[in-house]
Amino acid sequence: MNPKKLKQLKKRVKKAHQIVNEPSYIQELNTYRDLFDDFPPVKYLINNVLESDRLLKNGLLPQPLPKLLLPDNIQDTIFKKVNEQFPQGDPRGDKLWNKYSEALPKLDKALRNYRDYLEETYGMWSYVNAPFAKALSDYLGGAPTLEIMAGNGYISKGLRNNNATQKIFTTDSQAWVKENETGKHPVTKIEKLDALKAIKKYGDEVEYVIMSWAPDKGEIDWDVLQLLRSTYPEVKLLVIGEKDGATNSKKFWQEAQLSQDDELQKVNANLHSFDLIDEQIYLAKSSRR
Image (cartoon, rainbow, N blue to C red; front, top):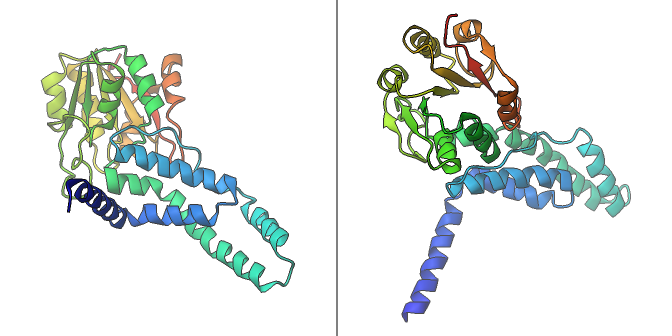
């Protein structure tokens, strides 16, 4: 076999291997995209998810997502479309209607599960999209920053992409590596340090600490805030999470004294919620004064 044909064969084998190993979740969405090809509102949602996954798979930050909820009137729309194709009582129309009806709840569930897919596949908890990373970079203005609990480092990566001179220390305890994908696929250089050790090491060198999606079990976030208040009161703590919801401890939300000034609101405007979780960015008061 000549070298050119061998190279072509290798490409085909590699492509086939990629198809075989494509996550079943993505395969499922591709199937639904074909099925609902005649319904642009549905196809639009699916395409947004698939494009988001494609960018992440290629090491890029994704774009914001729309609310991943099917239109309230989608069944009426589909019923009308089927009736336009087939007269009432036509077995072909009944068969097609049944096919759509069976797929809709499964598609609805798949769209609602996209955040779970991100966590399981990429170890991505906060949905760090490209415009948000740019807005956060503008807000920091190059100020030296420490990211704690960085996971796979999507926030730090976004900041470095937007400002080559951004001084940022990216840290994570990597305690969750054995449990899920968090920490297994870093997208930037990450130093293995737990949150408190990281602050003690870099607290005198930074103006900001970023804490994203702190776990709701335990009170490490409250310990972080107490350490900053007692030892580094001039350091500003930026928190990304869902207040009184999926992230952080109850103690933290009660004691943090959160604020969102006009400049931070501009950042928050780019942190679009695509599901039932309303994550936002806050400034937590580090000083007791």
